[in-house]
Amino acid sequence: MAEMGIARSVGRDGVNRPADVRVVQRLLLARGFARVGDADGLCGRSTLAAISDFQSGFLRRPDGLIEPDGISWRHLSGAAPGTVAPPPATAPQTMAGLRALTSPEPRPALTTLNPELKAVNNGFMLTELGDPRGGNYSSQCQPPTHPRLRRNLVLDTVGPFRVTGLLPAVLSLKAVMRDIQAEQPDVYAALGTAGMLCCRWARGSSQSISNHAWGTALDVTINGVLDVYGDGRVQYGLTLIAPIFNRHGWFWGAAFRTEDGMHFEASEALVRSWLPQLRA
View 1 (cartoon, rainbow, N blue to C red):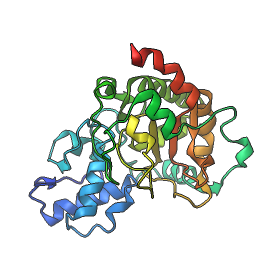
View 2: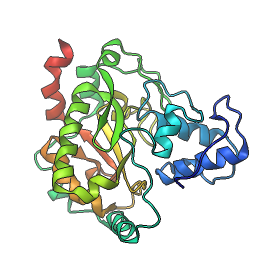
View 3: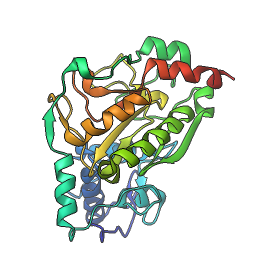
View 4: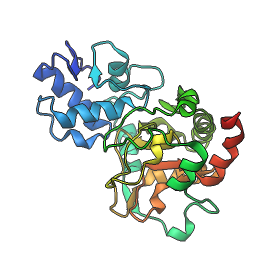
């Protein structure tokens, strides 16, 4: 996979040679963007949406286009600083270890998750941080329009990947990743992201705004694999790092009514601690 390349642009208004589209589709699938479906070489709506979702993790304004040697291609192929390239096929022990980290485990007892942390809700976020898009949402990622929110967004490297998010959230994630690197180095080496800032409806809803819309939530991958949503099981590697996220005030989505093990978001207490600097 590391030797793959594309000759022409892929995505919205791209040349979309079938061979190039298949390369992009396979890399998106490897990074957990299952909505691509099959790597069929056809750049349809699902592939365009997956490209935009992927770009939302490092671009303020995803354009849905991947150019050869462009920033999106470098992130997708693992060539950009702060991204994680696929591990070499000649390292079977490392691969075995990475596969173990993605092994599904039963979700821990809910009473043990997120001690003393409270998840935020839309009412709290809208009151304290404002409406990221003035009520204009869909199921697809869109950029925020709220002026104060836009002023406080940054694109930066947090440990093994880059994200676009609310400035204090990104700074907090840097501290989280430093501790993960020190305490769980194998997990740290395998970590990637499926995105942070993404203004859209919450999954399966047309009324509730995703907390990704404020740039205060993060979806993580392990070895390029997303935890399966809603199956009541979580990747073993996530159980190792969730206590570290909790320690820094991040709420783990495994505790949601519909389990979302890939998802971590700033707790209510953490967001409250950021309000003075955001309102300055």
